[in-house]
Image 1 (cartoon, rainbow, N blue to C red):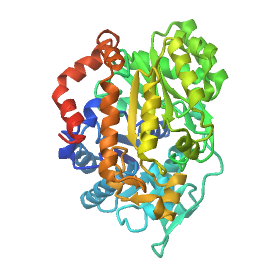
Image 2: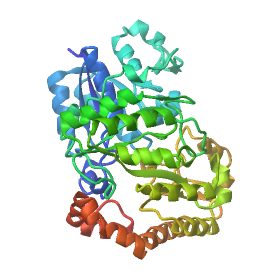
Image 3: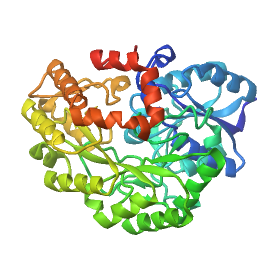
Image 4: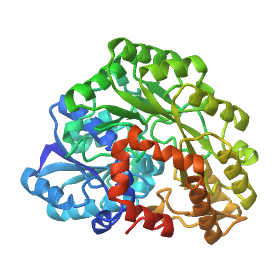
Length: 482
């Protein structure tokens, strides 16, 4: 008999587990599924038995999934999915139903939150979708009897006729300071198995942390389906306790804050930095920020508190293209803030993408020239992907003349050009992408910066040397599967 008081939480891999063993991206970065860890901790507080299986960290995890299902016979299995991992989640859900007929499958994450009913229609293995924040909604779903399901806010379910129905959003949002810290201990091999991007940290072990939800901006390329137009954040005191917990419980020495807008609320960051400085915590950290929310005084305080690197969303160095897709498009202001960060003694990483609607060879050249004029320490260049839920996704679907869109969900991972702007072709786009990356890393200043990482981030260099041939093969072929 199935136990409706138990649930297995799964982070799908997104492709065949055999490929996962030889995926170059897993050598460079393995980020813990913090959303699932947060849900697990919330359920723990309410005496709901649960376990997490992270297929990305452990591509051979199918044996663990089967063992848990057969031994514990949970009433539910839940999946946290991106667009590229959704179909793999559906595959695992179908497999789980063959092992345990009657098990209920629940899907959450940005992809299904954007699709809502469409994530259930046509997918027999999907029983429920959690739209938006998962903690309270999932708990309410597990506690509800069959007749109460239509009254659980925040889900998509099938009615008696088999039609998918969305119950509407919950009446109120969660208070983030009331939530427990994520159940990091349920992530097998944490923290050693999880790695921040190579050359993006000074020391190990390191970890990830999220201290806010949502974003106050409305860029065309961002999906806001989970948190909608809200922006909420943990208090400085809660965040400080979270950081000290990670150090004391797991020996963490460096943290990457995966907030979209870590510095948006200036007073919170100032207070957090003061707590870090006063208590001499001895932990360094990275964060992401918008240039508008940085100034010299704040950066000086962040540096003293242990800030090691700040990632700035530049997106593109072409002014016209940037203005088309982002609010407050000001490349000169971005330039000034990059120099401020460097002056404060903090590393700076530029986040960019190629292939936005309206992209041309000229705009890519403009972007390259702009980026190469900045004193960036690191660069992340992504392949633009129109995710469901983003404004540009709807525009592309409604206006096929904007470019060609091959909507294969399993390939929509920012490492494949699923969309090609009308002025471009895919082959040329790939060439320009590779040239951009290679020419960046071959510049003497950039190469010297990475050489300095021998003493600034020795673990990164050790990882790089161990996997040198794999990285060189990727640079040559742009193929992530070795």
